[in-house]
Image 1: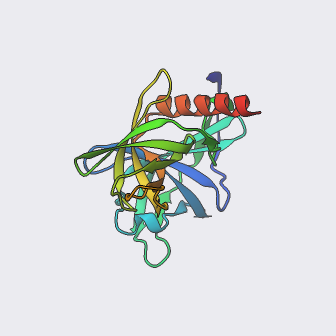
Image 2: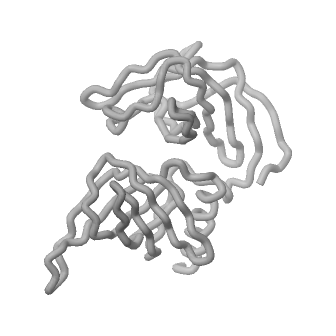
Length: 225
């Protein structure tokens, strides 16, 4: 919810701060990811890409990106251009972006926005997982605006993108998700197949859908108190 407040101010960021990067890749697909600020100089900002971009880096020189960050109930935004891409090596790679003179601010209702660290709510929601032309049923162990822990019996590996349909009561949400971690659970009694626990981060998720998940998690969180 926008309160109609609008102003401009110099770009002043903090080392280690999470920045939301909105971009369109070479295939024309819009996506968003969260990167940490490594350094801000007079003319540029340097962002840590992390290990997950070592093999699958979607960024390129001269790509235009939209940057968002938050200060309490203020949402900061500016448009930048990627000047340099240094690929990830053993630990991390970096992006170097040109730094504009000013940032736009909009005052918003922060309860409608995901926080920098999404709060995970323990909740069991049915999900359908699509991977390599196969479909696997599953269930969430916990859920947040940024991702989820899932239990399934599918043969799914780490560092892959899956399709995910979450059957929230009264609403069905479709998203792609990046598989951060895979853990094999001990097989239940009298069963040969072991369940698999997936830790996933949402990608290509519409903000309206993300806000729906957040509001659902807030409701469930209040019910548990």
